[in-house]
Length: 247
Image: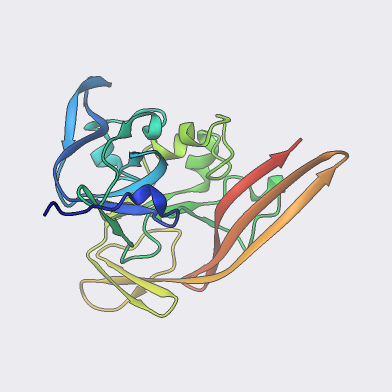
């Protein structure tokens, strides 16, 4: 009897998938800054689900290191290409083992919709295992206010996803205890408060806090933001989950 496969589009809770076989997912090599040849994404690759329709899915490599970006042509919006066969024959639903991977965290207690919070330092851990840190000066130079607001009105075109970080370091290993992710690497990063735990390693503690939201109104217009608080080395950070303007 033929094996029955499930359509993954029926599950709205899938954020990541693992590829069961090599396939084209919409990415190309980068040659002199231009689109080159198709990249066949290897079996076992973890990819972020951006959208799906019928039996197809828009996939993204997610946040990848600046070094890796130099060899990959990234479409403006990766979900412009829909990979076929969005079912359990080709994909396995996946949950990130490091919960804070692929989440840009910005310095500050919370989102306030105030200019004083623009350009606060941001860092994130890439899908290929690097911690990338962006200083106030670097963000201001490229007019990156936060992960949603920049000189570009489109989130996917935010310079943050393409510019060289102020500092980056390979994550050697990590462990999870409750709501806290402990990330280990070999060099201190100015701007983050790590603990030196051995002759080789520094440890950064990233603890998830609470989900918050707020709406600002002006006449008939409303602006709502949803964010999650974090403690990073006992310093406040937050992750903006969503922004929505209602005109």
